Figure (cartoon, one colour):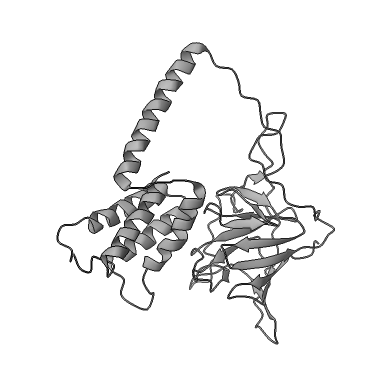
Length: 304
C-alpha cells in the first residue's frame, strides 16, 4: 500500500491546517459541500480538485491562472500530475505543501504540456482507483489542525460524488510531458476557406468587445475578473437580490463546465443593470460606480 498523501496549508487564512487525502477524489474551495473547506474569501466555491490514480495524485481547476505548482501555472480544465513533494498556490494568498511517500512518485518539478504523444496516441488516462475502506475524520487538536478529507454524504448516507455506470469514478485525462504533433499541410483551397472563416469570427468578436466595453480579454484579465466579482455575491446570511443570485448561478455553471448557462446568467445581470427603471443614484449594487464596475467585469468574463 502506498503512503497516503498529506497537504499542509502554509499561507492564507487556513495556515497551519493539515489534511490527509484518504479518498480518491477531494474537492477544495469555499463551498460547504467540498471535502476541504477554506476561509479565503477570494477563492472560488470550488477552487481545485485532487484525484488519486494508481498511487499517483493529480490536480484540476476550472478557473484559468489561479493554481500554481512550484511556481508553474497549470492550465484550466486539465488534470496535471503532482510531484511527490511540492508547493501548490491557490489564488494570491493561500498555499499548501503537498507530500506523498517517495516510493511512488518522483519529486522532480512539475512539467506542463498540452500536446500529444509522439506516436499520435492520446495522453495517458489513469486506471480506475482501487476500492478500499475510507478513513473517518479526526478532530483537530493541539497547535496543528489535522483532519482527514472524505466524501460528503447526504442524509441517507450516500456519497454525493456521481460515479459512472460501472460504479467507478469518471475516467480522467492527465497531462504528461510530450512532443507536439507537427501541423499538417492544408491545400490552398481549404486555406482560403479557413481564412474567410477566421476573418468573419474576428469581425464578430470585435463587435462583441465593443458592445461589452471590454478593452482586454487575456486569461489573466478574466481570472482577475472572477476574483473581483465575488464581492458582488452578497452575504449567505442575508436575502440575496436577483442579480446576486444570478452571479452565483453563473459561477456554479462555470464550475460544472456549463458555459452556456454561465453566459445566460451574466447576460441576465446585464439586462438588469441596463434597465430604465433602476434608481440612477443607487443603481442595483448601491452606487452607480459599482454598477459600472460590475458591467466591466461581466464584459471581461463574456469575452471568450
